[in-house]
Length: 222
Ligand SMILES: O=C(CO)[C@H](O)[C@H](O)COP(=O)(O)O
Image (cartoon, rainbow, N blue to C red):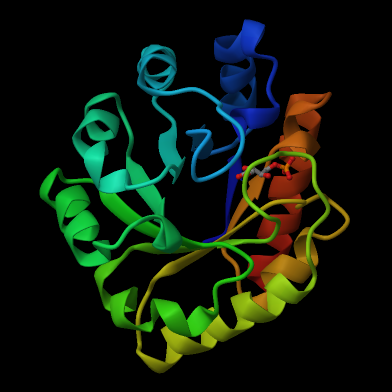
């Protein structure tokens, strides 16, 4: 099944609960939550207190994307504040397997993320251990960037590796995804699509509905 995961990085933080509910009522099943530490990426976004407070206003699936150095330090905190899936960057830790085990031990789904400069092959040893691979389609750190088309080749490579191993791993794309290029990401093999500015900048319900329509149509054509 194809899934839309709207990224709250582009939301109006003064109306966060309201905007999340609007996306949820329009049909979104996941919410993408970008945590940035000012170290792994230049910007700082928000952390556990914000996640905990939005957890109280929605039951939507929390797809938490940690853009933080040494994510293994904070797995329990993110699990405790309501993450359903914890995505961490392969580039951010020397203990990939340990980080996967910590997330699993806490009963959460595990995602592993690669930045544009990291080859798909680097994922190979961990593919069997995770529920999701997140392929960044922009340099992590900022919303509103343009999709890097070459990253879609990497999505194809990851999809081929997943098929070859007979796995059911989700493949998520994040960065620069809009209504006019989402088809390319789906064709390349993604089945979970993050969209920030293309959902939250205006007319949230309408944007979600249009994305969902495209995602459903792609399923029928599969
Ligand atoms: O992870 C991110 C940035 O690092 C954001 O989730 C991503 O960029 C989505 O924003 P947009 O759809 O506006 O590009």
